[in-house]
Image (cartoon, rainbow, N blue to C red):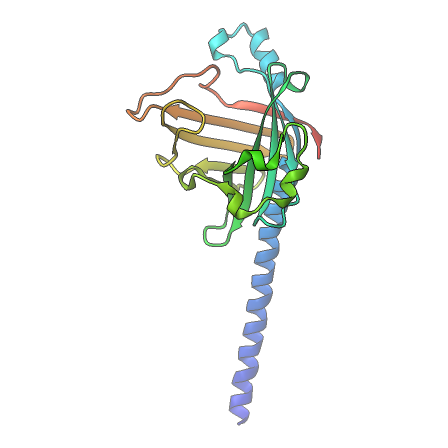
Length: 226
């Protein structure tokens, strides 16, 4: 019996250490996820990059267009993970018109130790009204209200001082934004005050589909939080 008690004590100790270790891992995972969500939230603008390209007399087709984005974190109890509404402004940044509201969802994946990034599409946009005017209706958003292209998810990893996100190579074929289907190789880099976004578009034949500024990453600076 004494031997059994002694072995049981050792097992309990080992179990305690294991549980502490698991809790520490989960805490670290939550820290990474929360950090990325806090860095994303806020207003982003690539005007500084555009001005520098103009000053350098870069050919017009090589220059980036001026974009601005407001990442608004949403409270959506019916959805897993963190959903953002991304309010996009073209032609002059935040001084230009609000052209689009997109929905993105982020979730932690235990299996691969990555942050999954999905692009959400409303099955019935009319049900939620004019999102350019108000995001309030999205509080009732649920899993059955959206669709995703599972092959076009991005996966983000913490690399010591920044997050790096990529689509799975060769998988993201989509026709959501173009008249015909294309292959998109997506890449992003996120720091506390900088977001680099570089999507390379290809015809299904493998040829690069050129677009203005598409040869280099868009470089957004964070101009405000929240």
